[in-house]
Image (tube, rainbow, N blue to C red; front, side):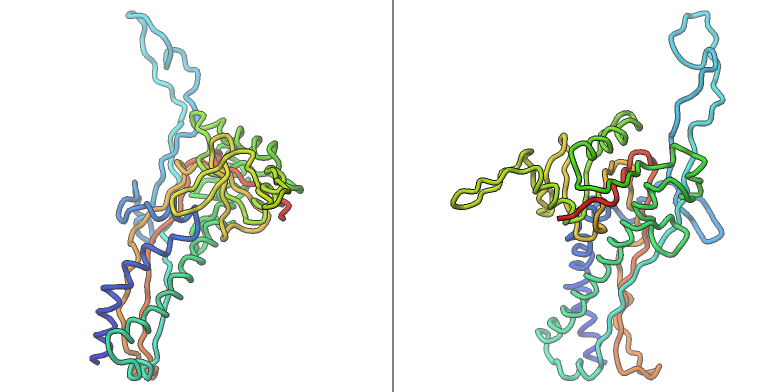
Length: 328
């Protein structure tokens, strides 16, 4: 079918590269974590019953106090190795995401010429991009722990119980995130408590980003900015912010950007250290190509865009979650 090959050529040349780039836009966290990840660079792997899984090495506690295992020494001292186990690994599974689009064959016949084909494909691919972005971003903020077909979620990472990466949270305090139900409008004290307690572990590294729902951030802005009620009603930021890559305007809390994300669940704020959060890509988004389904009794052509990746964490204590935050 000539028109099928024509729309396939247009798809590969114009739309697939754009889709791969655009699917991670509109969300500051998707852009900062997922967009920068590279296909094939997923760290350690381990063979499992379902294939090769991801292993994130963890260094979660200091060595013990076995005499001679560390500290100052003289030339005649004997070094002693400590037996305390402080390195292990969290195991994560690959996840598969897709967006399938179709065009009725009658529409292919009605739309002749490259320009009409481009318009026809553009409409379908805009929808595919939005669907993939929404699915990935929504799951990224979820309570998922990796047992389902969805990626691990930030509310799962910061939970106090459950099994994440084959490690039980309830019996391993190092694997629990900071978690607090605020029950009020967000204050400086709330943010500072999460900031300090997530900074405490992991060599004292401070959070790299604070992300909240649009309503929670608006309420924070209302409380922590000054409005000049003169002719133009100018609003002044108490703490100057900055524009993050991608055009996301953020406040600044103790040097850490605080930004809203349209996909962040309502009444929630996350205090995160991205150095311990990873997007691992086995396969960047590719398409299966446009295929006619007439042989199956379907009067349309269909194309599926799919990718294989995972969202992992190797230090849950560096991640914080504030829930039940009053919105504007």
